[in-house]
Image 1: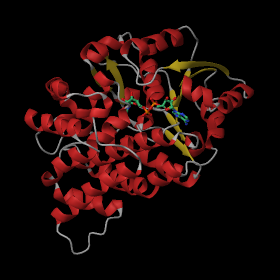
Image 2 (image 1 turned 45 degrees about the vertical axis):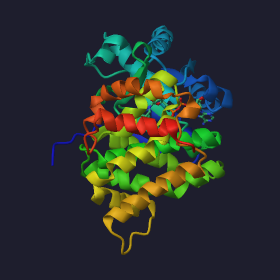
Image 3 (image 1 turned 120 degrees about the horizontal axis):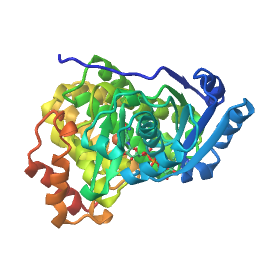
Image 4 (image 1 turned 60 degrees about the vertical axis):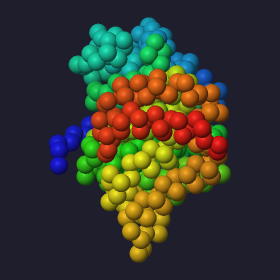
Amino acid sequence: MSIFSQGSIRKIVGGENSIEQIVDLAKSFNAKNIVVVTDAGVFATGLVNKPVQLLQDAGFNVSVIKDVPPEPSVEQVNHIYDQAKNVKCDLLVGIGGGSSMDTTKLVSLMLTNSVSLKDMVKGTKPTLKGVPTLMVPTTAGTGSEATPNAIVLVPEENLKVGIVTDLMIADCVILDPVMTKGLPPQITANTGIDALCHLMECYISKKHNPLSDTFALSGIKMVAESIRECYNNGSNLEARSKMLTAACFGGICIASSSTVAIHALSYPLGGRYHLPHGLANAILMPLVMDANKYSCLDRYYEMAKAMGIDVAGKSKETVAELFVKELYALNADLNIKCNLKDKGVTLDVIDELVEGASKVTRLLGNNPKDFSKAEMAEIYRKLIEANQ
Ligand SMILES: NC(=O)c1ccc[n+]([C@@H]2O[C@H](COP(=O)([O-])OP(=O)(O)OC[C@H]3O[C@@H](n4cnc5c(N)ncnc54)[C@H](O)[C@@H]3O)[C@@H](O)[C@H]2O)c1
Ligand SMILES: [Fe+2]
């Protein structure tokens, strides 16, 4: 087995209304000046009011930056940084989905390192830990609260790029299901499938290891038990809590393993067509998992068991097929169509998409099988021509 390494969060607090612990957590940083980073959609829900009020009542100076755009570009993160650097700040609180949390992580690094985001995208590594961060996820998807990654859009390349450093791992995390209760059904579905992809991809990745394996199988089980209920009955806090935990587990897996071909093929779709990250992954998920199945049948067998599929008396090949079938059924139940034509993707851009995906060697290189350009083109083609 190859060497693995896992950076981790100092403290995770979870459970219904655990957002109320934010004051004690903030005190543990000896912070005085706090900047909350969120997006307009989350701000409009009123979700940040309670934590901000609690912090202000406890005597902290709190400023709120509330205009993180969805799936931000380098320039847009720079704009948020420009706002943050003008405020005295010794703790950053990211409240939102992956867009807000990734931005918070990047701004935290930019505040302490003299490296521009443009240079980080090109590979320059920051050397100093950022301003301390506390993350409050409001989607159960990216697991960004637990990963050393932040993803930014690079518009000139029509591609999304991941910046990875343990220096960016959050210090504290609050997993409060109440913060995800009002998440609309389709965002619940898209982001929930993103979490499932993290868990499955890290489990079949060449970088899988005993630690990520444990979190992956446990997370897959929790997703299977709760994702449909979250979609159909969003106010079920037990189901919301399971999905939030599973998504965080997905992030923990990414911290020592890696996502693979689903995410690699998804980046050009996000980059050029601005498909929401979770939706792009969801559309690719069944076909890519189908293409990978013979390279790790044992692992598909374990994932199928975690998913609750009856494996008794069945061959590993049959179980792998049932597993892929269940992924199609899951998408159908969540009203996600495995079709790229409806998203405006046309056959003439396939070569460009393949070129983009081929550049994501950080992920593609960990896929259990080598995908040729022709195989990637075939996956995009099938999804453009699909009638579902
Ligand atoms: N850092 C990582 O490890 C990692 C992993 C996967 C994806 N990502 C990145 O994360 C970003 C996507 O994040 P996301 O999928 O969480 O979506 P998001 O943060 O873009 O949020 C999606 C939408 O949901 C709304 N929303 C969020 N929480 C809500 C709530 N509780 N109630 C109502 N509306 C709410 C937001 O306002 C937004 O409009 C992408 O940029 C993606 O590349 C990062
Ligand atoms: Fe993802």
